[in-house]
Image (cartoon, rainbow, N blue to C red; front, side, top):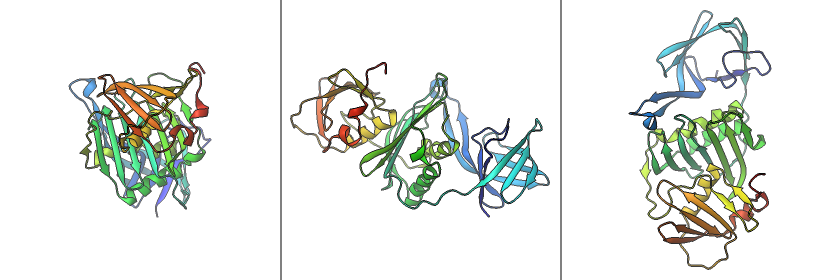
Length: 340
């Protein structure tokens, strides 16, 4: 019988850490919910990258020991079992501390939770990936890799309905709609994961996880998405004179107040504009922002619906989104002075 084991909240523990979770699929295969990464060193740190091996692995039960195969270092991780029942599993750590896991029954997914999700990784003082991944219910995947990825650049691909549904189920299991909007470790130079969820053409939730401080179930959901591109057939997407992505753009209004788009929301806005035909329609700019990507630099002028890109080269391109993005997504009320 398949069952999931997670650390029992509230007990004193030294190891495993709070984000360890296993899903035992059958008598020989289990899933490490955090997954396995294998580092591939480059000629220098700028070319280092990590390959996501996946989450599934094999395990053995021998007398009073649970052994889980670790494909990262090709060895067995051993756990001494103190007690096991239908609902709990208790280990003895090297420090003679008891760590209890309890069976969890994920909630059933009764309805579509979102139509699109964007997961973005900012990078860190190290080799954390810098990328954006956008998944649509249609199966379309748009991926942009900046640095520390096995593929860098702008690509499109597809996933199956079952793959999309599984990812959606993982985010549903995390209860993302009820989570806080910001989790922060308080440290410096950490990786920031930002998530933007879309339903009915409107943003319904945004989450920022800085330094991996969000609940474990959310990390179990977004980590495989960050590395999803490594297991897809990627097709290069050419943007011509338009930016390949938008990162952390900040719009200023006439009162010199600012609204800072997260990395994932910036990529969402970019994805919308990417599909808009150019227009010559006149408009009165109300907001401005600057962009600086690997390919292009310049300024954006907009009234919330019409977006005019003014490149440093002097070339301009204007797009009509068809609706006011700022009004639909409640941006107008979020402008603040810089120090707020």
